[in-house]
Amino acid sequence: MGAVIIRAERADTAGEMPERKRRLIGAAVRLLLRQGYSGTTVDQVCAEAGVTKGAFFHYFASKEEIGRAAMDAWSAGWDGILDAAALDRVADPLERLARLFDVMEQAYLTSEVGPGCVVGTVAQEVAASNRALGDPCEAHLDVWKARVRTLLEEARSAHPPATDFEPAGVADFLLGVVQGTMLVSKLRQDPAASRAFITNNVGHARTYVLGLFGKAASVRA
Image (cartoon, rainbow, N blue to C red):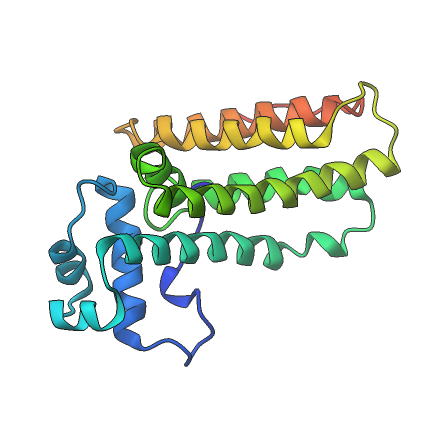
C-alpha cells in the first residue's frame, strides 16, 4: 500500500456519493497525511472541505468514522491504480511481477498529496489502542499483501526460482519496505531527496525479488 495517486473523492462510483461527503473524505485524506490522526480534528476536516459541521455529522458520526472512510478511499485508490496498470493482461507472470515495481515507483513519486499512507499513518498512531481503527488497518494491509502474494505465487509457478521462497513471507517483507519508505520519506524536507529515497528503496526491492528468480535488475538512481 502506501502513498499513491489517490483521488479519495472518486473512490465511490460517480453519482453514488453526495458531493459534500466526497469533499469531506478527500479533506480527511489530505489532513491525515499532513498531520496525522491525532492532530486532525473534525473542525479542521470541515474547514478543509469547505463544509459545515452540521453537514459533517449528517454523514459521519465521529472522527473515527471518517477516519475509516478515508482509509477505505485510500485503499480503493491503490486498487484502482493496480487495475489501471492492467497487470493481468501481461502474459508472463514474472513480467507482471516486475511491472508491479514500476507501478509502485510511479505512484509513490507522483502522489498528489505528498508521501505517506493513510492506513499506515492511522496504524502507527492508534491501531494498538483502538481496534475499531486497528482492525480496518489490518484488513486493508492484508488485502495489499494478498494481491502481491498472488503475483509472487504465479511467478513462482511459471518460473522455478533460483532461490526458493515463501510468497507470503516476501509479501510481508515488501509491505514493510513500502510502509517504512513512506514513513521516512515524510521526514525529508527536500522533495528531491524524498523522491530519490523512494526510487532507491523500490529499486532495491525490485532487485531482491527478481534476484530470487536469478534475474538481474539495476537500481535506478
